[in-house]
Length: 483
Image (cartoon, rainbow, N blue to C red; front, side):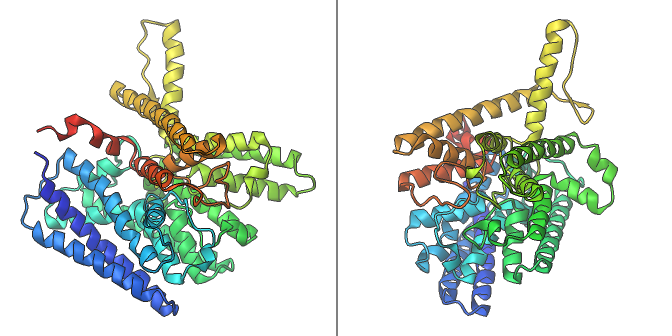
């Protein structure tokens, strides 16, 4: 049987962690003189009390985590955190509807960046900080902190690591999962701190720098400004964010290698090379289109806007430096393609992932060779290693299910009364965890126009997109619940 007690026990641990983070947001609110401090403190108390209760009740349970427990823990982790993460919004009445507050919360923890807010600047500093912090934790923080804490409690973390990590397999930096988690957390902290410092140097306020660094490193995209990065109109800020969005969209183990000056090992990674090639080709293509249709716009600005939006979308960050809905249809078509592509494996980004696209391309080319040489054994290789047939099958299944869910999602949203552009944009950006799309969900728009049913459905798409589809969808399989 599934060990439900350890699942509840683990949720208690995570709720205690969330309450501490809420308290940090409350401290920020207090130091900046906000009126919402008491509401964030109350939210922290309710979250912490629930967490301690679950922790105390189930602390003596058998701490055995199998595959099924791992899937349940990871899925419930994002749902439970999102439910309690909505409290600061609702108690302060910044977002009066719980549906809207949950949508904003799950958008944060899944690092999607979709919002129902139409006047972000009106939020208090405490709520803005909490909003950004949910993305930072939803990116790498939740699972890394869990992996560091779990061994101390006698719970094995390897199964959880494999259940959550984006991509085909968990590439360890050390044989011990605890050491791997610590190293990833250190990398995450260093990149976040470095970006905050560089943005502050560029003229952004320290508060905004911290919030934007949280949203960038997590590839979340929540900004403290309604017009996102376009608000600052600074080439320096945009180029800095471009660099860090690209870093966040790459495999985080490569960032660790960079800090150890193992650059050859980075370039030997075939997925990373493909990631850079995709960014280069599509940025040049969009820049060329913008320059040809610029009507006097300087070439540097066209190139910067093209590079920013390509990196923002392929990394699934979702920041905006320009209103790309006003661009030529050919440029918009490229951006839509990138929404499917997604970031690298073992990154905080969403989408199909570059490594899966790479395997699909190589498998397709191998099929052509097999047609010419039917008796030849032609393996699919990535990084010089032969990819097992079951992994190729997994990739084909993932992409097929991904596209099927997009089609079903578009049908569902359109049946709720929304035009086709809006339906397609909302579904793709939700399941790919990008945030903004096209139609009525452009770079400077919000999701307040959707009905409650639409928001709950899009929240579900954000969740399954963040957790790599099968982690959540397997819970709907009858075989999962059988003894």
